[in-house]
Amino acid sequence: MSGEKPDLPAASLDLRQTRLRVEEGELVRRNESGGVVMRVPFDDVESVAYVRELNTFAVATILVAGGLVAIGYYVSEYNVVRVLLYVGAMLIGVFGLFALRGDVIEVRTRGESLRIPSPDPTDEVIGFVMSLKQLCGGRRDLG
Image (cartoon, rainbow, N blue to C red; front, top):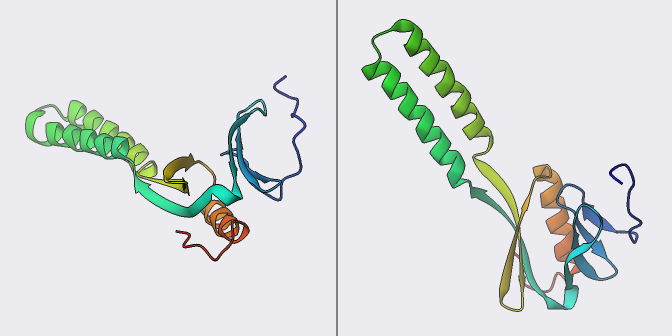
């Protein structure tokens, strides 16, 4: 089943990794097997916005890396342990830096706010949001 793709209606606009699509006048999010998880008609959409938010887990990871550097510098008396602490801190810090900012699509519908994190490339997410604003009727105050 993993190699097969489900038969989906034609989409005029979609984000593949987020599995967010525009289908027949609705914003639809599907699960991995193709089932509908979310369906919002364009008439219900009040605003759409692209948000770039800070990942607090990544900040905590960077702080842990800083703690390892501090232990290596102030506490460790052995060069081998100090080097291992520095290398570990560097690896942890780099992973934290990669995850520091995340793309989120914010859709407001009838007072409810849906925040959808998106692993897609940033330029694709921005283009999707801009196009979705036009499809929902650019007359509204969208994002």
